[in-house]
Length: 163
Image 1 (spheres, rainbow, N blue to C red):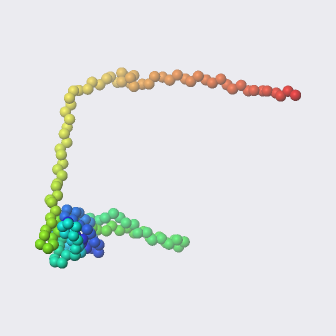
Image 2: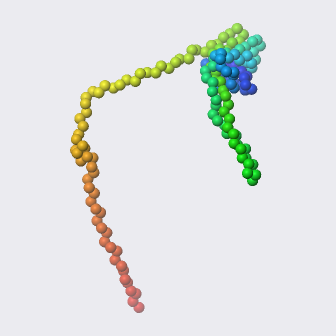
Image 3: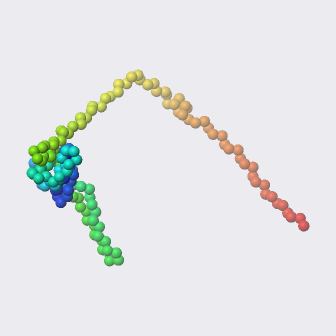
């Protein structure tokens, strides 16, 4: 079950339980938003049609905020002209709770809230003995390396050609 709605100049395909980000919808004082501009509704068994009667989609506001920054950069070569501006588009995140048409209602299940589990502290089973520092250093210190044997100097060959 899904519906296609239009809001903020865009179209969204929504189902009960979906969370969508739409253009900013007021100040968010009321926690529910009703979308009355429903373009299509899917019925049972793959039937899709334009709603003849009043169809409506209801959602609850989850969050309001501003999107990522978009940089707008104007540049004209050889003219020493450049201009940069930033923009953050405001949005409203809406969770679709109900789709109703032709006397039928499809509602979303209640969202499950995750509970934080308390951390369990491991009990110390047995104390660990620590070796003295001198013994620890001796155990970790690598054996001294022997110097590499020196290579004999190369002999100069002074071969004279005899004629």
